[in-house]
Image (cartoon, rainbow, N blue to C red; front, side, top):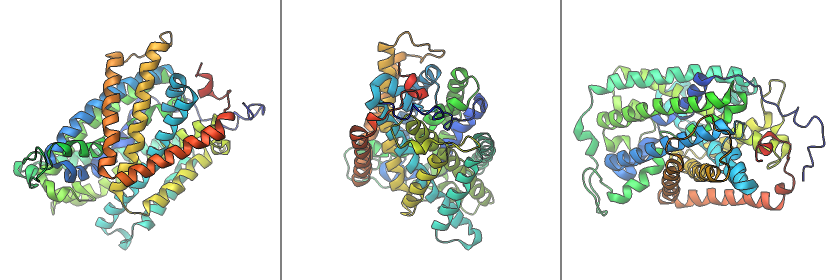
Amino acid sequence: MDGHAQSPDYLEKRQLRTGTAGWLLLAGLGVSYVVSGDYSGWNFGLARGGFGGLVIATAVVAAMYLALVLGMAELSSALPTAGGGYTFARRALGPWGGFATGTAVLLEYSIAPAAIATFIGAYVESLGLFGIRDGWYVYLAIYALFIGIHLAGVGEALKVMFAITAVAMAGIAIFAVAAVGRFRLANLTEIAPSHAVGASAFLPHGYLGVWAALPFAIWFFLAIEGVPLAAEETAHPARNVPRGITAAFAVLLVTCVLVLLLTTGSGGAQAMSTSGNPLVAALGPAGAARAVNYIGLAGLIASFFSIIYAYSRQLFALSRAGYLPTALSVTNARKAPTLALIVPGAIGFALSMTGKGDLLLNMAVFGATLSYVLIMLSHIVLRSRAPELDRPYRTPGGRVTTAFALLIAALALVSTFLVDAVAALCCLAVFCGFLLYFAFYSRHRVITSAPDERLAG
């Protein structure tokens, strides 16, 4: 059924501004999505796997993300629309696969800002700004401010994001220089070995600790897959989206190695495993600590700011195609999707009130890894069923590359239950609720004239 397509102005009310971003701005967007992961969140993996477990988990996750990025570069060059992963899966796996993938991405991007908000609160409190000691004031202020900037239009939002990201990257450079002199090899393995199978000084929680550390290793790269969501607002998307996402990954790989090694080696694995602002804590009373604290706040804000952009575009695409209520995709005079920005923001603010950043992180990873499995499956299916599809960029290694990413993503998905089974089950219940909504209501109201649906072939 295409009940809304009869209105001649349906799509006119749901237009994004085109041609806004080039590949460099997309690369900045990709780094911005993720850079907060360098400043906080990943370090909770030290409590799960120790330094050795987190290092191994990070190496595996980095390989998975490289394969994922290469697979998504091909998909985004062939199917450049605002739907991102939902569009890819819609073409490969049909309406059910498309909706399931879009919902998983939406879970990730709605929850991740809530986790980042709690980390921002920790940095603000450590600075003693405005005498704030209760994080909810911070959560409310940042949601209101940055949603407001996004409502002003994508061009303005992406430029602000790029500037903040540049500051955040400078902060990592300052931290690295300051931390080198404090680095001690013994700090890496100071967590006492447990009685787990395979436990040692390098793997204090044994082999299972490596698996349990996967969700936290993912925080170094989580949300980079959101770059294709900017396709409709990009100049020459078939060329610029693949270049942007691969460049972003290269930068993030370097920062990941620097932060993991220097933070743990400077501050000690035990102390860093529970810190809300590990880079600052690792420097102790060093003169650079306060500067890194301020700049770290910029890094967290950069990711918070850009993931708001990502969730709004994913919700916009699902709503425009009728999978979710169509009112959510109406754009304002500045071509920004108003309710798609506000509604997930209100939900995220409510979640941030828990103050449980590590718990929210695990929930965001659940949505992310589920979407990775479906997106990589889509790449494999499209290589087999749609060989004629125009692919300006082709994934090196083809289906072997994306099959590897699919396997690791599936293992990481299961690991979220090892970290917190209740949180993961709550996410699974919400995901199933969305599927029921689709089964009984929205699948009969899909807008076949929507761009993502037309690409379904």
